[in-house]
Image 1 (cartoon, each protein chain N blue to C red):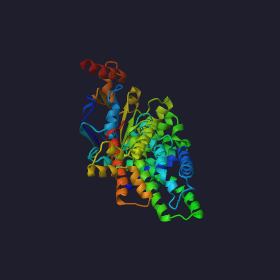
Image 2 (image 1 turned 30 degrees about the horizontal axis):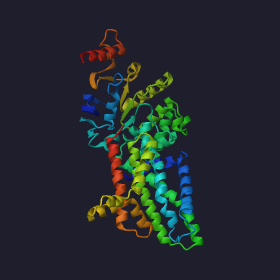
Image 3 (image 1 turned 60 degrees about the horizontal axis):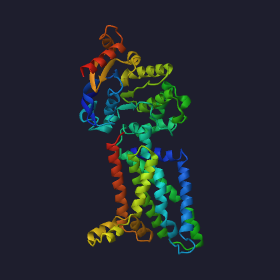
Image 4 (image 1 turned 90 degrees about the horizontal axis):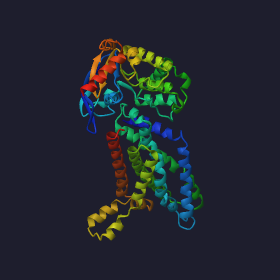
Length: 243
Length: 242
């Protein structure tokens, strides 16, 4: 299985750099992230020992960019008909799904690595808590994994990459913005269990927990389950929707 | 040996493959002949497990393609219709990708590639992107990708469709050469292809096998003695029966 995942991973990761897509996404990511950090994040006016100004805006930036990485992964296979070639090879469908997912996730890792000079430069001028920053990078990485899994699943349902981009970005936005507290207050729900379940489903609260230095198992489990659930949906969609 | 056993497939209540059974033996080139929409491509997709049947099975040397999919698929090389390739890859990268999926050791890959480059005459395009290739080269690269692991069974969906006479001649010669120790199944609706290549013809219409015999015997089913008349006679008489 590892061998198959590796073959798909190499092909997909390499394909990013065969078009301008990789360079556009990397440039836009760096420019947008730093613009948000300095202009929206008041970088120079707040205490930034954990680069809070930078990490606070990452989900928003990634929600708009990760669908661009995942949109073609399956939609192009359907558009060009290569899905027939791919799914008639002696591999498990799960290997193909994982290979594509890891390629997109690894690209997100590369995007994050390219922001390390910002971390190092900041550390020259102000005291930075490196452990905290490391956990924050971990938070962004795992959150980007969840967004990649959503993007891959959506792409597997579409034939047109643009549709895949728009739907994945929409789902990511809803997931980030949807605040269950609002509904609880509106409908005056007092059931403790429902309140706790709704709080535990909130993407933003789990992400903020981590970037405020409170990495807990529940946050890790939340993002891990989101990834596993979307990948399972992806495998199902590949298995049952061939054309 | 490849055995198709009581295969059935329905799409939105329309039966596309109707209780089909046949065997393919080593050294045989079998042409799947039928009018457009007869079910040729669907049958190929069922044999390669791209589709799952409603009932029935396909066995390759005793391995069911639905119960033991990965093992059975290792023995097949499949070239879908229209020369489908990954447009962003070069020819070398495409064939290497196919070899990686098939877990071919690097030295074997190099040996097989060298021999395929010679046999298919693709040295001039080996570093060219697949999207820039002509139809004829796309077919050749598709065949090279399907043969990189030296499969026992080669399945080709309309391999010479839309090619010029020189390219057709080249691909037919290659198929003839490769068939000596293999099983080759080609789908086509070109009569001259059947005449030039096939040891046996399976004629299908409306998802049913209506003839399963040699081209010579097929010709004898009509007084004019050519395959085209036999094809027209068989497919239209079934229509009338329906």
